[in-house]
Image (cartoon, rainbow, N blue to C red; front, side):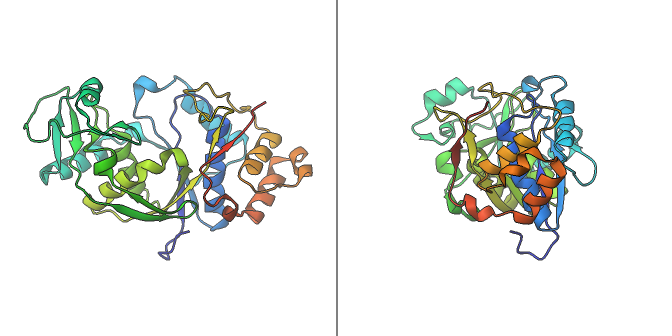
Length: 303
């Protein structure tokens, strides 16, 4: 997927809000196979910048589960909780250029003031944009402009997003002082030299905002591939919020086989009963991302 001539550097970045479930495993498998078939590097990052949502011990459980499924990452695990200084520096650069402002709006206020809805709910109408607010306990937003971001996703094809129209000026530091995912993700990917991001389609709508931040911070663009998300019988994404069951933490060849089958790789049935190493060898040698073209979600039954 990388066309820059650089060594492929991918990553998997789970949030420790619970154990690894099937939907997360699918994203990890897709990311891992893209990197390994490119002869590249696969990094692991724990996105622990939202303490109110994190479950004690979940990060350790995720790491042990990935090891049990024979994932092998390159270099040390990166923890976002150790990188606040990097986020502060990026925020300062944006603020020094007049690209941010302080916002006192609650979610209720945003919903009341909004005149349109976007992919994530009410579009922020810029209530505090020109008020010149200051002080603690307020969010910081990035000023957006009416611009269309265009990118070619390796799986989803040509994508066009206008963050200003779909989201509005978006939060990059929350009112509780924690940095927002959009800023932290962009800064981390740049500092780790990530060239290619493979993740679930639930994060496809974040791409436009992240590309805006990359441009404003003078960072190199990256390539994207958004794999389909696993949904239940009523179309809800499998997630910790919808009580998705964790995958067996001790590793299961059959569960990994099912993840490959979900990703339309058609693994041989007999490999479901073999060892993890044999299944990974087959998967790396036969990875065919083209089978996932234009697929954004796939129903799945979890036993």
